[in-house]
Image (tube, one colour):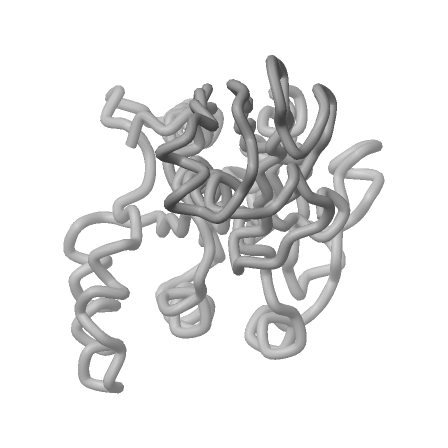
Length: 248
């Protein structure tokens, strides 16, 4: 799941007394789409833990749940138990992937800094002069390809981040056309408010739903008065970190 960038929650029995269906340490892995691996004993309490695990994935916050397996519980569920059980539900995430579309000065600075703070960085640009492993350094995945073509051929992981910082209005439009409706954690677009409005107007004319555009962070970055490419990259990275930590 972590290799695929999928969001999951690990449900673990951390305490048990009396008669319980499973012992301490039993685990169940719950995927965001409802798949499960393993069991904590079945029955209504497992179903309850399953739904709480899916909520924990969305909220990205752990939960500690206590179950009283008393006579009333047994009558409701059909389970013959008489103990208490405690489970810990922990959302588990891999280092998040950030896809940077555009390898210019801002994209270069953002990629280097994002890598340093723990993102798995992927850079896509069609210019070999800019999109080179030597320029970006080790640990950053660099792809030389036409951005719309690359987006047609790749589905981004649900927990990933996408940043559009291409070299011009047309290229930004092409990238956002593919990304606006993508079911991923974060999409950001560089540009002035006037430029963003022009791109949004065009996409709306093409039929992109308004709610998809409302989910895009544009103009991307926190307002810190940034001017240079490096400063602009700092403002973008600050917003990415805020999104990663659930602050926005």
